[in-house]
Length: 331
Image (cartoon, rainbow, N blue to C red; front, side, top):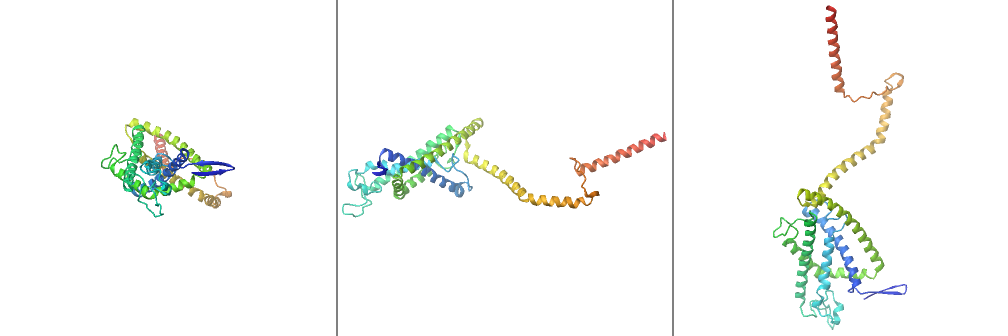
């Protein structure tokens, strides 16, 4: 139980009560979405695509799939399997996994449990449940995008045992391994983070509200874009690879932007010098003409080659006209 004293009013926040759990999962979703975005950026840069690219469906640094994944991790490890332990154990408060850390004599007994199942059995159940739950979340998200929006955010179609290209045994094993890492190592860190943040209710709720407001705006804009992509995909009877689509936009836009910005920067940097040189050139050139004045420029779109050709034609026409005159005079 966390007590917050504000100007005489006391707010009781039970981390395992409805409000405490609600705030905890809101925070975990944002944290997981941001951490997942960082992981995917580096994964695409150094493993899969070897390019810096903005992963996922949204424009901002947020991958909701990983947010749901972290919530699943925390739920399975911290809440879902508390029923496997003895809730009446007075030493349960001295635990990290819902498993008592010390016995009555103060001796550490990390691998002992007070429930009907031993620690290794609880660990196996938790880790397998995490792998299954995250695979299920990935499958549902993949179906929503592939079947509903005709958009493919990831592709496992080349991996063995895949289902519709959205889940496969390899990544299910990876998610299970992530569950083991979280259960044995990361869960106490995230629990400590939540217990530290919950007393700062007003600041945390403000930050959470701002984060979700930005997320909603980004989500609405991304959904509008997805409907346009979906229309094109339906007309062409294809499923759009969203990563390749963004990469093609990024490549073409980057090339044009770089070229335009390069030309503009060159022109801007040399503009003062060009202006001074042009003035000096005109002053020097003016001394070649009468009264030191430059003649007015004639507006002409003809190139030197065209002018030369026209001069040749004029010569031929003049020669022909002279021949015609002499012929008439002889007659």
